[in-house]
Image 1 (spheres, rainbow, N blue to C red):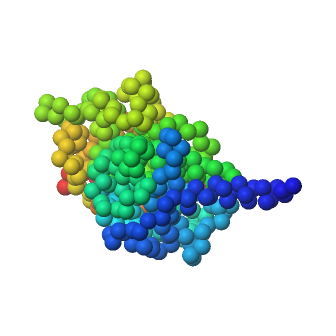
Image 2 (tube, rainbow, N blue to C red):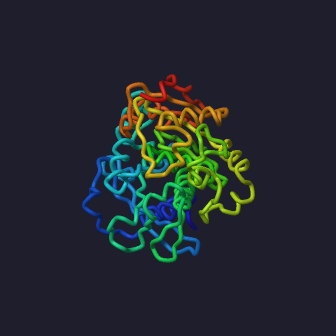
Image 3 (cartoon, helix red, strand yellow):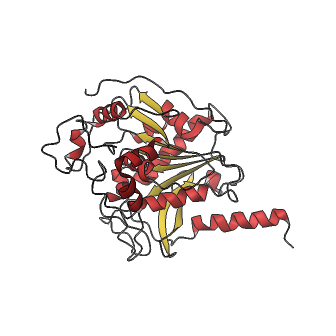
Length: 363
């Protein structure tokens, strides 16, 4: 008969196997083979039929050794921006690595052994990766939860991928001391985290999740109003920027059934941490008119969203002076340190108050 120790060790091994059971493929030249503090992990993602697909990600490997999952209290899933196809995922891991080391100066218990860092790589179909069972999405549609177009027949929403990552870190047999999970992103990664917070499934997790939104270029508006004219933008409220014509398979029945009001309630049930670098007046709208109905740049759009949809209890707004559109600077700012690494580290619910004051919406 197995001892209790051996039994739980076996359960942890079987659970952790998911992370390393994906298909290993040669990486293209724009992705480095190694990143300080990380290994290139091939995460096994199941499609609706239970078949295996692969997500490439950069995952914690402190001192060249995989973490003892018994010691891990926090997981940070940091989503790259639109340049993820050109090295963004490893750069975003670098930002996490620098941030957790800086946070350790505030609380030494927060370190490379107690915080699991993951930078997933959502692959665009414009890249020429080895065609195995690695998932691809059309262009940058992964940030809106679009369905994969490769492998053939897999049909996996990028939000399904996040669901499975959350369930992985929520597995008490693998991470028995997990206290907090953070879904974070900068730029387009923040746009993904924001939209996922709005329509992501209720997974029944026992570990709390917070969504950190660093300098998103646009927001999912939660009703049909806009602060600026919509006359010349007939698609202003379509999915991605609004909730008309929801085009995803993911949670389509839910969105169609509850409409904007129900999606807003789901969003309000999530813990959201907004973060803005006050020197970021840029824009990345990919030729779409909808973002301009909410503001002329990232700063104006965030302020208008917060005015239209005030934060709920537990949410935070951080405004970082002297910081522009830079993922590393945001991750190592006070907002990054507290929201990504320090808040609720021991599961006591303690979170740092909102940081800083709004700056001007335009420069």
